[in-house]
Amino acid sequence: MKNTYYRLQQYMFSKAQRLLPWRMPNIISGSKSICKLPYKVKNDGVKKVLVITTAGSIKRGSLNEMFDELKKENISYVIYDDVQPDPTIECIEAVVKFYKKEACEGIIAVGGGSVMDCAKVTGARIVKPKKSVSQMAGLMKIRKELPPLYTVPTTAGTGSETTVAAVVTDSSTHLKYAVSDLCLIPKYAVLDPELTCGLPKNLTAITGMDALTHAVEAYTNKYSSKESRKYALDAVKLIFENLKKAYDNGKHIEVRENMLKASYYAGVAFTRSYVGYVHAIAHAVGGLYGVPHGMANAVILPVVLEAYGEAIYKNLAELADATSVPGKTQMEKAKNFILSIRKMNQSMEIPDKLDSIKKEDIPEIINRAMKEANPSYPVPVIWDKIQFEKVVESLK
Image (spheres, one colour):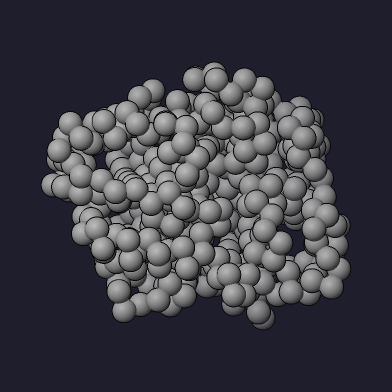
């Protein structure tokens, strides 16, 4: 009965969300495209912006050209560069305080998913000052237009530059949760491949596998729309063609541009079709042990796909066809596709286990994953605690 209720709720929500006023961010792409952003900011009537980024981006000088253009456009800016991986409530509150103190009118977020997520929830807190971050957890708890938000990803993985979601960490409980609302979709997304060329090999690998996880989960979930499945398939194809090349030669502009495009497509796909048990388990593990999200997804993805079994053979066979993975039957193609993910991980020195998982924590990991995923995620197969336990046990 519980599974029937879950499926009914998922089906109804999938139908209802297609009536929502979805929008896409305006895209600026190509080399040096970050230099075009200040002109757009000026056209929006914004006279002072808060630039949220990391200390590394400032130290490398990769934003200097954008700063020069902001000055040319007579746009004042202040910088907050203390965003750490997995933004906490405390970090967001510090940024909100800084934004208000400096009387800013918009936000430019330059960085990976943590920076963009921090910027999104900062914007939400600014327009909803009486609602705490924890009260925003879940769906449609904001419903108010944010200050103009301009996102510039420096990794090709999270897709946060196009999604309705932001992931926040509660440092007191080590719990990760998502804030999701249509108003969190940024106004602009700048896809500048030059900003990703300095990305280290390990970050290239795990952020790319993060994007692959988004796309594969969106494609295999129930009730996915044709549009989101098309975006997911295109993302998977681009990742298979470009990720290892980006890992081997990080300065290859065309490859880096293709990976940014793949990450964006995957973001569009999972925003409309959701993720699944890979993400639910990864969030639990990341919250408890601080495992980087992309790393957790990379390790967990093939394990969960195998556990779903024949329920996703057809979908995986289609992805295998799109990526030239061989096989004569659906089952053979599906298994070979999962094997190709394992081989991709191995080729980029990503482990096949999460050694940080402690046996005594497994019940808590399962509880957190089930609470996040059921009934919200339209996964191919709904698991109970026994099935979760088998999967999590196999990860350690």
